[in-house]
Image 1 (cartoon, helix red, strand yellow):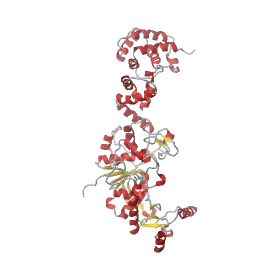
Image 2: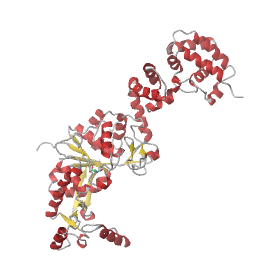
Image 3: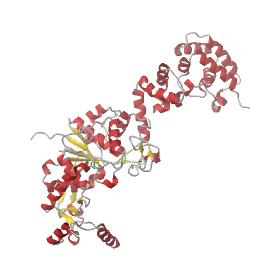
Length: 511
Ligand code: GLU
């Protein structure tokens, strides 16, 4: 037999926006597919109609696209194993559920919600939990406990029923998970899960296993929350006689809150000051907005890099990985078992790193838009130069304004603390002289200004600080910003002189 073709799937339920954990699942599946020349399938698991949220499907597509995670088969791109929405595969599932009933591996159950509620309450009263399974099924209303003709009659009179899986009694099940290693369970602890609901829809378990089989999925890579379902899924493969086609499983660790206490949930993010969603999301019912990484100024490459390190590491000190490098380096074997804590400061650090790698020209395109929104008109050439001077002080393009507004707008006020500290009795006299000297500089480049002003300071026997500190204050308005000569080189002589003049007029030491 030849090597099995690698086919993986990302199988979100469209119940709302994907969060970081979901995006990580998609990414790891994608990386695994690409590095094995395999196929990455997107399957929409929308069997729970009550939880369907409008716009969620489009959100999934947009988020994957933003992250450069391309889909090979899916409802939006087609493929040989469609349809790729479970709601469009309804007719398939019933057949498989009925097959199991005929084989005696599943059964029909008539218990109503009320019946089950009552039994559950009774159990609770005596301090126990009810488990519809090996030990209790005989006492319930189903095709195993009722006479055959009664079952028939109930079906004919269209009484609603579900199909439940008949968990085998007392079988020791041992199976391995690529990330978690060997897992052992005794089947008697499992319950007879519903496979097919009375509304004509399959449950997640049935649809998931049938689809993985029909879509020839070779590896199931998903979140740890599905690990408890794995024994049932394995029993289903066995019941259908599909053991030889069973995929391999890899359950990824939980993503935890920054303090490590508990799962990072969809509700948590904005409350803790960072987004949990890739893209901004507006709840279609309440109109409530949740922030997204994209809108918060993250680059998709940085976001992907952040996701990759949620539970995986390369075993080296390298932290910056392009998608190509991730495809080459990623391995399921290096995914850890323990929950991985999300670190929002580290997330910013990643963005900072990617920002440094971008060309000034590329960054300028977006910054020019921001400047335009602020009503500031500036030439591309000088904006690119300015970006070159300040980008190492920024994590996001949105930080540029804070770091560079003084290039575009002269100071209207001067930082009081700096005035108190740096504006001395002889400062006006020094700046007055400096102004006259600067007026005589012809070659007004940063390097030449620096050379000449430094010589001038020496010749006049002044201290560097008593010149440069107030000089920066009148140019910038505060004790901040990049190399001062770089700033005046961009501002030009006239503007520089004007700012010294304005500072001399306006700055007064408070008495
Ligand atoms: N529909 C499930 C989810 O939303 C998929 C679980 C799986 O990958 O098997 O997470």
